[in-house]
Length: 250
Image (cartoon, rainbow, N blue to C red; front, top):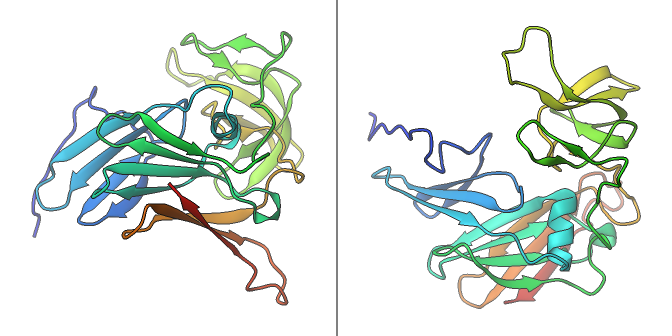
């Protein structure tokens, strides 16, 4: 049997989230957007369909957490309804070192705390040069330009390539629709990226900074700390148990 049916109209924060990620939080479902200078979150009560929405603000510019999120986005998210907080951390660092963690107030969306190990993350977020800078059709600045080497997510893997065109359009696309980048790859030929986002298009992954690992994040229910678990995606049989767990006081 269906408990309820609910439609969120355009303009509601939930309706504007494209391809939301899901997270179970007690008896609620949390949907959140990808990181894009902040993040939309929405909690939906499983029994009533009532929702609670919030926009989580970006950490201050210049900090390790801001650099990290701008470079690769969020690796994992956790919520504590009792503490009324949201925690997020970045992707895994080389050697499974502790990635930066950000704590937000769920009621206001304000950053409560940034927790970063010394030297964690990239030294600076990627910035377009004067030759790279371009302006998209909606007025936002694109991160890359023609000729830049990038990696593009094609649904199951990252592929390396070079950007050959900005604001690419297919002949049968409706007026006003465009893709920020057309990319020439060695494996798949010409492809296009629908979004200018770190989870769609990124700088070639630096093996000196990042580790290809799964990231899990949990807020301890009895003490003021978060736990970050990092497990390499590709390990030999001998090292199959290799992983790292960081317990971080808030």
